[in-house]
Amino acid sequence: MTLLSRFRDLEPAAQHAYVSLMMAVIGRGLVAASQTDDETRRELAAFTPGMVIAMKVIPSGPSFALVLQPDGTLKLLPSFDGRATLAVVFKHLAHAFLVFSFQESTTRAFANDRLYIDGDISHSIRLVRCLNRMEALILPQAIAAKAVKRYPAIAASDKVRAGARIYGRLALNFVNGDRP
Image (cartoon, rainbow, N blue to C red; front, side, top):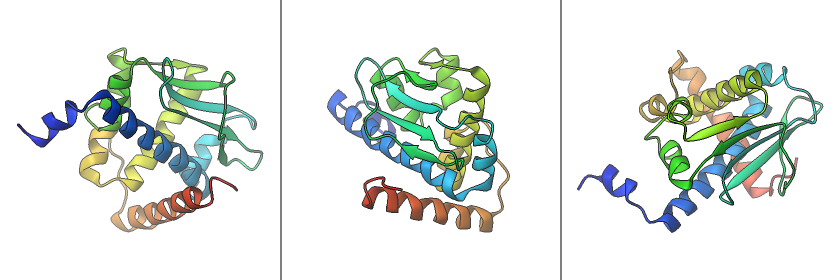
């Protein structure tokens, strides 16, 4: 039995814990990228301040919600029960697990009807570009190439520099409890 096949067969409780951790990292990673990466900020500039972006697993799985602040950066909403302006919704925990364990890209999961978008499709495309950018910067290329549809051309020095800034801000966000 290979390591990957063991990873796929994790019990639902372990999958839930893993997806919860990944949701926390992705939400905070997007916040950090919005604070440190110019390309991410350019994508977010098309969004309206006050816009709420959410990612969740239905019916009551792990989730996160972000709000776009007037300065163009994202802020994590610690508890959000309303309707988001843009939501990426996984139909089942196992579907989210496939994406977050890098067995299936977000675009492939969408094509396989494992998730749906609630909101403006042009905003969802921009959000996916932000997610892809963040993943390309913080993940090793071998893993990021599985997570994104097309791995971008990024100079190694730029990747290390941008990735370090995002990881630094991400760590601060965890330590500070997501306060600005």
